[in-house]
Image (cartoon, rainbow, N blue to C red; front, side):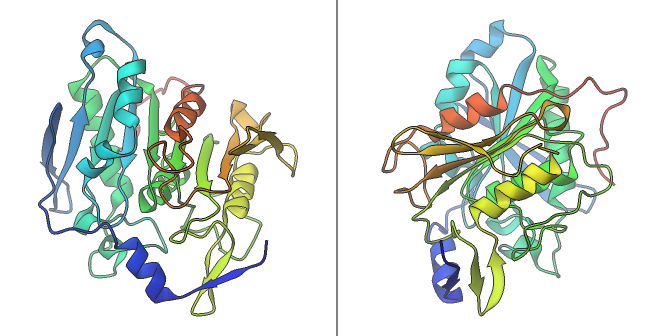
Length: 312
């Protein structure tokens, strides 16, 4: 597929299309949790706890991250993660980004601006620690990250920079946007301290917000493309072959690398007719959230000798 060059105005308008003026809060069947981070910011997350958890133990935690301009509670209306939580007995939490954004790297919003430069990696560590402290039944070796758009970018940043916490990632419509990744370069250098984290990214080829293909903005390399992103995780996870196994299911295909270091994998769910909202509630109605869960739930971290750091 050829390189695309996208208008920065089109990209910005599309990314902000879901921005609203409402105050973010919790919704029915959830609880909102607030605390102050060491940098003095008031932060919050929403927690969904299925009724079945009451009789369960050693259950997972899924941390789902919203897109740019959205509230944490917005995800409950379209992502499908609450249904999967009900069916599989895990706790789902949706943190709120500063100015409805994440510091996910090159893209996008106020959290990454120099005047704020929000440390979201440390914030999300604190969210996980807060849930683990309040919910002793959660298995600390099965903390998974999900997200949509910039939330998916932030989930992948967590995999890269908090690999001692994140057991696996399954996210929608976003790519790795922090160094050592470079959008026009296929190769990537493994950062110090990184341990392989299985990552599945789900992407529609018709996405007009986060380009499926490599694309520039103002002639500057910007979007790496879904296949390059998969190649980065193949390298980071030490997968043995350059070419993935491609499994076709009609309306979508899975590009899969297995046999990677520490039992990890790297995967791309490729949906030719899907756009930016590549969830079951949008055409072509592929239950991609179930695919993400089926992927991440295979993996867990080794039991740690000591808890991971919460704040640098």
